[in-house]
Length: 284
Image (cartoon, rainbow, N blue to C red; front, side, top):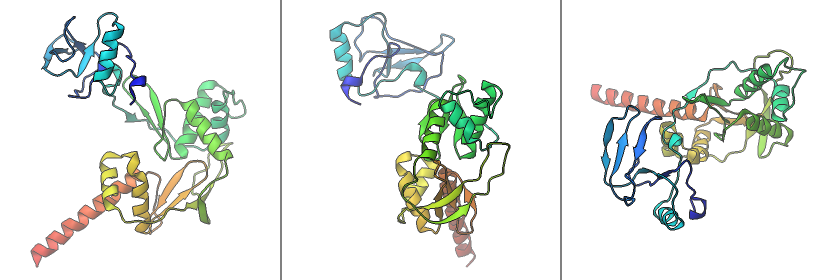
């Protein structure tokens, strides 16, 4: 992150020298007038002291900083976060998938969508169900905020942005797609549902088992391309419906819509094979 973007937010500065996870409600205190490197006291939501650090991890600025002080703080830092983003726990929201592109298009364009919904709440529900049917994941945190994760793991902070993206993908001509068409086995819902056709995604196969194992553990977006190349080298087929929805078909035609789940499956299968091999060697 460049220094030009380092602006204090919520009066909380973070120096990534000794990261410490804290919960919402904790107080991070610094005695007024002390230098940045001096001792910082940590207190939880009940006022109990959690301990002290000799290196600055978090500091709460009391009052306004002079320009000189502010410039010095910026020189010492490489990253800035707000206090409330220090630790965020996201959990998946269970929602029944149902294709309804009209709802997504209507909500994304800020239209009422009377043809598919009688109220705004119903329109929102159908829009969420639609993107869930396309393989999106919806998650919420402890504050009730939602985020929407596309099949390629792009994160959207609100539903309207996600719906606009889905609608734009539908209108665009699919790129880098080839191979035979296959029918999507999708349960039809009520009016507005439709069955999309799947096309094979052109990905060059390449053996990279380390990427699959690492992606199964940490789900790092940077490894997704290498992981896809590896599973293609194993005989898997990756297909797209042109809406941004991706599915992964095993050699036995078992279908999964999550790259992370596929990588976990392959990693577990590999570990099971190792265990069986060790047991057979012991028996011999």
